[in-house]
Image (cartoon, rainbow, N blue to C red):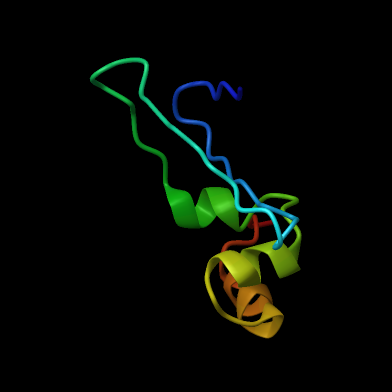
Length: 73
């Protein structure tokens, strides 16, 4: 069981391709909240390879996207 606080971006990865994963999800309220996914996802420590797999692209594209969402100095 996983519990994610309202508005927290999360991801899941089944690391064993030989054993399918099964998940059931539910919201704790009718107002689940919103989060800006691009800036939240690309400013995290999620591995570039995992993001590339999730978005069905390559690592170079993920790194290019991350440059656009880097914190301003």
